[in-house]
Image (cartoon, rainbow, N blue to C red):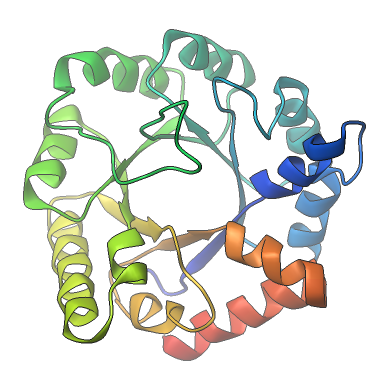
Length: 243
């Protein structure tokens, strides 16, 4: 089913990054979640990394208590994170690749190569009523793996698109569009995110099969200059204009 309105999920991890740079409680990612809810955001994304470099354990429950927006819990395919998700029951759990030495998530999850590891995780989360998403590259091999795993949602990594220029960007955009269309045909809801900005979001937002964009670092960066409310509203307007 093609969605009538493209949803905007806002990743608030880097509010916590700024907080943790100095310690203490300010700025509070919970306040960011409340602002997103107040200005019409459709969801909150938060990634609890194994090294706790930004979001902390206690932030998750506080975010859930502070807003009615659905929480998209980004997590590694790690036993600790599965148990955490089962305790807190977020609306969705997006399984992402994670390496300690990376600055941010670099590329998509190898769902095809990690099938045996992912299958029981997808089953346990799904059985608990948590909507499972796999953060994958827009590639047929990875989408087919998501189908075999029974994931109801995939989020396509848009980093290659965001960093490409000229004809290479057009090629990457077509890959995303083709995989989004194929996902819908096979009963999977496609999302997208990573590296999206005011300047590059509209071609992705115009892909009719996409149901949701998840955007974080850029919005938090813009918020430093214009405020989070303005940043979210502008991104929302650009997405709406593209549709």
